[in-house]
Image (cartoon, rainbow, N blue to C red; front, top):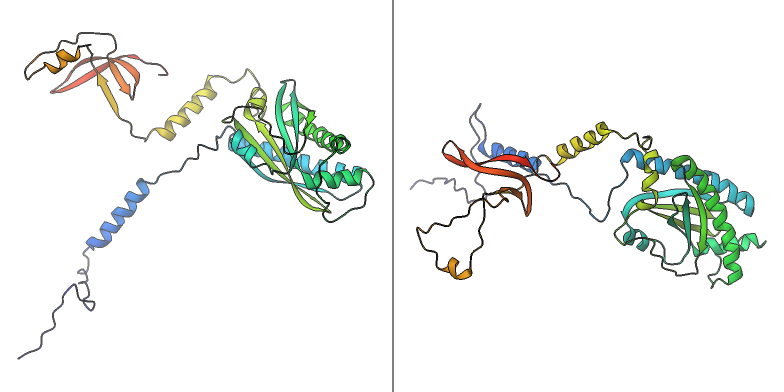
Length: 330
């Protein structure tokens, strides 16, 4: 009896045969094809809860202007309150009003600002610990690590108005250079107030600023509905109002077409229709002829919207439609 070694692929000791020199490995080729397919099918996630109204260039200009505001406001508050205060932009985001308002800290004192001459509104929120610490300093109190939280009286709110006024005046200087707008303090609202200046889905620019002081660090939130600056937003891109010509729009259209040009959509061609009674539809049988006739709605449709008017016909041995008139938006 002789011993034989059986190479069974199911056995752990079995090794796949190596390809001959110069020959390609089918498994390697298959993996390469799958990797290439994965690259082709890569999907980009879009977050529709964060509408993008400002381009990257416009956003950088907005951030730079508020970084300048933080530097100048820090020097002004430190001088007025005789206490070191540092302001720094933490984040800049574009989102809906509801999302932006939800991210404002719950214990914040809210002020409503007006952008002149547009007469539009925006919101400024300052965390309560920072407001209380600044009130204590304005009244001559000593610096303390963490001021105790308390319900603000009418006198406290009036004094807090001076803090908001100083910030708004300094912010107005930055906005004058950035957008040609002046900011005015309209009202300082009581604690835990909820303000709805615009619709919940309104695109909003949310700027978060950190205020560092002897009592710790607090957040300042500035919410700017896009509708509040839309009429002045042309200054962000450096385009004079009224000078935006067709070439700029064509460039934008070209970029949009390039971005979505590879997306597949389903089209259908409708060559006519006819209204029939249900009894007539149920009575239809094999070989029956339904006359549709021209009804004026022949066309090429994307979903329920007609994109073009078309005339039915043939192209060689295949049925086809000829586009004779463009639809809306073409």
